[in-house]
Length: 157
Image (cartoon, rainbow, N blue to C red):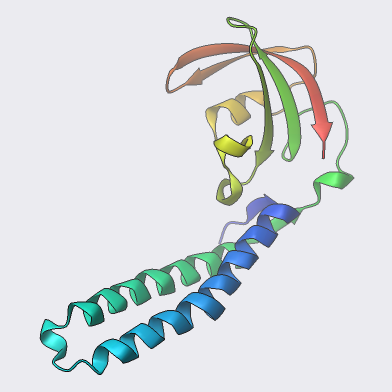
């Protein structure tokens, strides 16, 4: 059973989703199933089958969240420091081709979200950045082709 590294914030998000699935979605779906049963013949009852499908999806998500939380290795980023990039670092990069500035935080897979500036520790960019320091250039072989970045800043938030 491999541990899954994640930040405390990422752990809290998963925990909140788990509580929602268990305490809000589960009772709502059970209520839908109960109502659909009262409509009679279950073999031709679309509402019943839809509710059972929702129940299956919700229970699967609950099991997945419980597994991730059980295997979580929560790392307190606020206690990390230094100039070398590692898990939890927030890195400011400058694209050497376009001079575009990008800021990424390296997080665990369950909490990765490129839209909010969080990339997975297993992503090509994060793997290229790990172990590097401010002022270094790094080349990344990403799915969209090779990209070169200069590391401008390493923060711990």
